[in-house]
Each structure stands twice: as structure tokens, then as C-alpha cells.
Length: 177
Image (cartoon, rainbow, N blue to C red; front, side, top):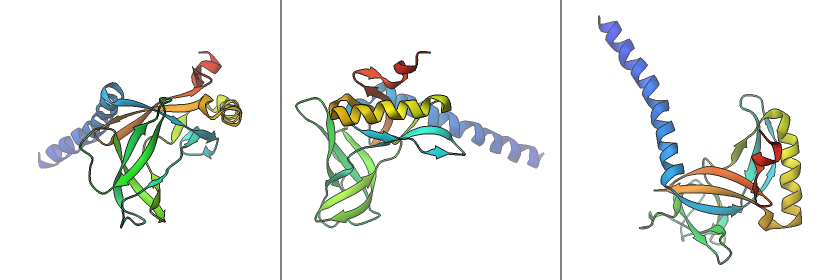
């Protein structure tokens, strides 16, 4: 009987964790503030995850004095006059507004930090379309930086990639259904 209870609790945990992650991500995508961020991409192959575009952002930003490699912090997002957002500052203290994301400092030089932000770097795409998507994205970035961007949603320090746009259209729309 004790083994059955332990098994049942273990099974419930195995089911509850993914459900929590799904609902948490959906809440961020539904209720989070939207930000447009310039990007560029390339197409690595991960044999365990399949094809995806690795999205690169400008993760270099001023940081609070005393920050060093490996520190956890909060990157504040600010919108400019064109409607695009950028990482304006990394701080130790959580801001009192909701336009920030949790981040890790990769390195610091002259009070400028290179940061790492989870959940916005990979855009998964059908393997047969990945190479063409990469070419479309690279061409747009080389032509005009405003032509290639990602939208992310931010809520209480968490963020999720919403969509990738090229020339005002979603990247997926280049491939039909």
C-alpha cells in the first residue's frame, strides 16, 4: 500500500510540473507587456531538439557598479521613439515596474555587462524550412535592421518569445500552412 501511495504522489508530480510550466508560459504570453527587439539569426542544428533559429539580440547593456560574471540581476527594458525596446540597465534590485527580465551576467567590462536572458533565444521551426528561414532573416537584417525583429512578452521578470517578424510579416507566413 505504501508503494502505491509513493508511486501515485510521484506520478502526480510528473504530471503537475509540465502543466504548471505550460500555464505559466501561457499567462506570460497572454498578460505580459509586449516588446519589439531587433535581432539577427543563424541556423544551428541540435540533434536532440531538431532545427531552430538561434536568435541573437544586443545583450550588451550598462550595469550597476560591482556586478561581475555569474551574478543574477534584472535587465530593465525601455522603449525608444520608434517603438523598439532595448535592455537599458542591469541592476541587482528588482525594479518596481514590470518591464524587466531576470538575467545572468556573462561578463563585465567598464560597467557594461553582456547578459544572458532565458526563453527568447530559440525559434523552433520545421526542419525543412529552417535553412530558408535563416536566409530570409539574414537578408532582412543586412538590408535594414528594422526589418527583422522579435516580439517578446514580459511579466514579473519572466519573458517568452512571442513571434519573429521579417518585413512586417511573421516569419511563419513566408511558408504558408
